[in-house]
Image (cartoon, rainbow, N blue to C red):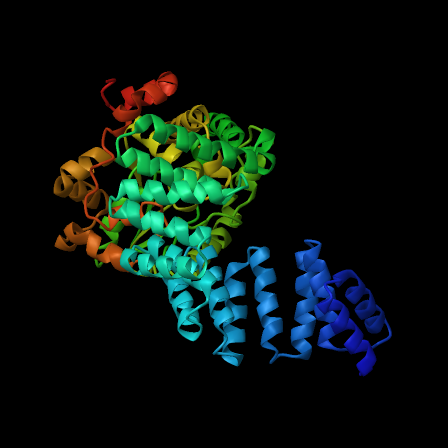
Length: 536
């Protein structure tokens, strides 16, 4: 056992905010064979300060092993796991801490933060509400609850939490943004502009918060038909995000370059390479991939199909990530398209279905629909793994698609980084559509086109056509998809739109921004013509 003096020294130095010195003493104590969770905790803190989170986690595991009932160690473990983007494990760590200290408001708040990072706003809101019930003045929980409520479509609740948060913390940007989102939802555009203008005047850094506020300000201007001001706000938003992410997502490794090489790879591949001689046994009655391009209406169609009792859907999860990494890995470095051998297929399929179930879907005996627009780039792999799968390609006027992508504040990752400039978005769209067209002509897959504009104008006729393609019966419940959408966790930024029944406002919206979009019309023209849209 360590001496009381050694422990006292480590704790005192840690309190004095000298994690390096505390870690040195703790390390020396451990090297002498002394064991105590405080030593590992001190080392974990120092590793965390220096962004060495994997090492911090190792130390915390040892500390928790020595003191499994110490909820503070479990809390710190959850925080480190969040920094490592291991969100499910972070949630489990916070839940373990809550079992020990159920009245800890901060623990419930942190669990809500983890659910928010997982894209689960309804679960996040529930955790924040518990934190607020335990500590009504918890300003961070109030603000976070307001933001989660807005994303979950709970606007009245969101507004109440935002107003309470701003009373406690008048400069809280999260609460101010949530209040503006409520104003926009209620079409109080001038009021949203006022709130966002005040917030932007207080924000100093060119960071994610400023970018988000600028995007919302653009929406406030748009709602007042001030399109020049709106487009300027959207452009400023994207300029900030481009600067923030260029180092990590730009350059030679960007996804657009990989798509170029995928196109070259498919052009050289033979049909025989894609035909599987190993039968694809599926737990689903019918396997469906809903593909296309972001902001093309895939969320609307997915929610319509989800309203059918025979359908199970999975929305925007990375099911292929890690299942067969060689596919994109080789495509990034050569023109050779790497596809699994017959001997590998069963194992990869099993991993895929395990990932599907891990995300909460239950495909057994159902028409299983996976909605992930950018899985379009996996079409050759899909054909190899699931030769009986059916493809629905969602199509929308390319001008409306690019405008919507440019306007929205999206989570920035390789697929969405390409959308931060108009020209980049148009080129990326063109390559994705080129790849889909090439796969349609080269690969033995069943692909059905569904036009967004037809879906919202002739709903029954077009949904029935989709059902016929998928081999399923029409159900009247699909007309009331908005009811189910209100109770589902929808990860897409379209969540609040599909909760309002058929959303027609976006059809032809590009015309209001024709002047700003005109420089990219030549890039989009081939697809405008191919999909049968009017040039004017």
